[in-house]
Image (cartoon, rainbow, N blue to C red; front, top):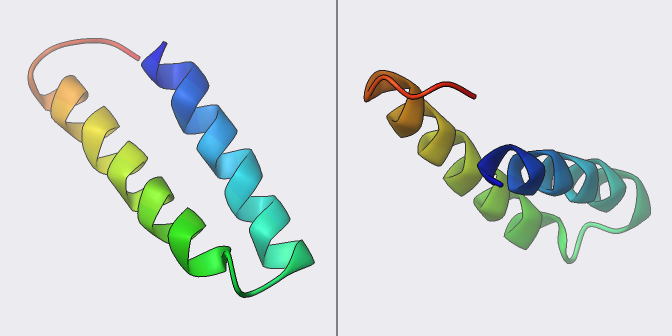
Amino acid sequence: MLETIAILLVILWLLGMVSSYTIGGLIHILLVVAIITILIRVIRGGTL
């Protein structure tokens, strides 16, 4: 589930970079949150 959310956020981030810069800030924030969540899961010993 976490991987799906991370992939979706990456796709939305790329679309935001291409389409408009107004929503880009929000997508960047969401992408950072997804990366931090994945890193915490990996550090705790979980797998992607």
